[in-house]
Length: 128
Image 1 (tube, helix red, strand yellow):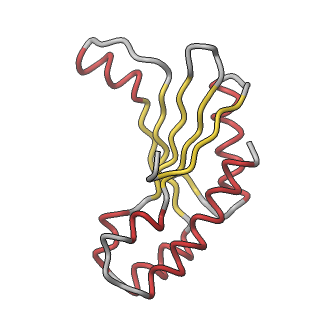
Image 2 (cartoon, rainbow, N blue to C red):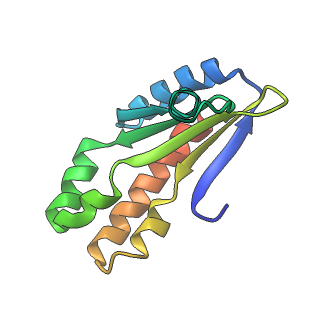
Image 3 (cartoon, rainbow, N blue to C red):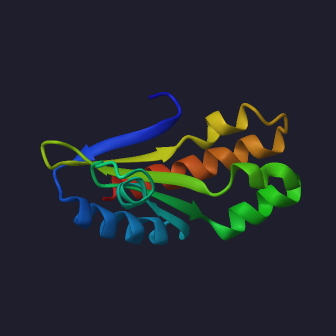
C-alpha cells in the first residue's frame, strides 16, 4: 500500500478501536466521522463483511491552517484512519498518507503541513 501507513497488532478489534481513538486524541485529532462498514454493508446490501471502521480524524489547528492556504482542500479532509479485523483475530490499522494526497494539490505551502500531519498520524498508529 503506497497511499497510507499501516500496521497489524495482535489485539481485538474493539481494543484497537478504543486505543486508536485515544491515541489520535493524544496527537491533537478528534474523530469527526465514523463509518461502520460492516453494519452499512449488511443494512444496504445484505452482505456480510468483517469488522471494518473508517474514522474521519481532524486536527483542528492543522485543518484551519490548510483551509487558510487553500479553501478547496476541504475535499481532502478529514484524514481517514481505518481499522479492520483479520481472519486470525488480529487487527490492522491504517492512516492516509497526507504527502500522497498533496501530490494532487499544486500548493507548496501545504507540503510541510502534510509532513506534520503524517508524523502525528504515524505516532497515533504506532502508539496503539
